[in-house]
Image (cartoon, rainbow, N blue to C red):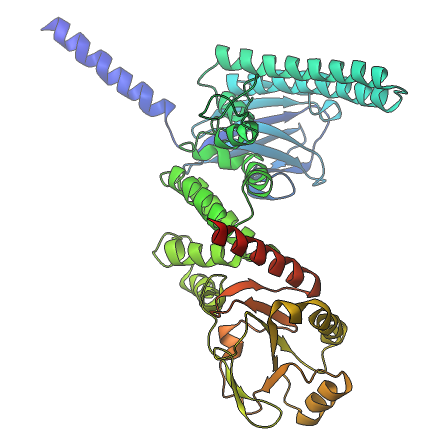
Length: 481
């Protein structure tokens, strides 16, 4: 009976210990050795480096240089930032939910003038910071040495030294990860890791042909291997945004299908990590919306239709959500690959001209205005290309005036000798071309094929020709199969 009582008592004490250790919130006690009577702020990263930081707490530094920051609610751990009152001086710490740590700070010696109590994680972090400071000094010296190199032999010697220092850095991180596999800093090191392509010659499945794409494909396929998508704390580091940027802008082919495919993979990886999912969806949405690359608007529409409209963006208000949906609805009818919405408007003689019934191998759909300064620069160039090149390729120009002054419109056509084009206008605003083609400025151009499928949009006189050439090449390849 006594033995059973002891077992139960030990179990109760264990539960109490676990409960105490796992208490939500945080407490950070700061002792400044060379600052007093000031203010200090606690902030955290959110996906990207400074200055994108989010303040979470603040405290007064008393006459003895002491300040205490404390929160009782559950927090998401990560790399947090202690910012001094001047809003310029700061240092990083690792902070997790339930932490109760003390920091002794000598500001003049930052970022190394720190001493942590009750925080092994931050002691490791400080050790690494000291190593990085020394590493950075060596790199600076070597870069100066490289700039003074006068021959290839001299450059090769310095580059060898630089590469050796990189190996030292990688060995340091590898050793740390082996010693402290469960440390948060290990998670951060793993997230920062870049793939190392296996050495040697690699062949295709026939065993004879060298695989020229092996290095690229290996690097791309293993790019995210070290990143733990199940740990939301990594969003409170400056790592994720940079990795997304490099991956989608340098490794993923700039085509909507490729971006959607890789984006969906990442969203699937982050589906059980709310903060990483939120940031990933936000990043993909704004990357595609702001991109100057033709066709990326299809990515935006896909994200809105498959995530926002299906209730996955739970952090948005109804008003914010509706803005995304409305914008996607404006873009959706005219994404590349869709059949161009019909336009049927009167020409200069009052005769109705149908876009879909325009008989041409290619139709250049142009929205313009005779009072638009940019149009006045672009249209003569388009006309010159039309006469010298487009016409031979079977191109017809279907030009829609967005201006309602009939005289100015007709005078401009006559003065610039644009009579070969099909000119239409909508003086009574009876057409919905503005909505269907998202005409918010001029000029805007679309290239349609013989079936009136949109092949390009937001083109200028230079890349219209390049796109037609590419379409012609693809057509020949298909016919030769």
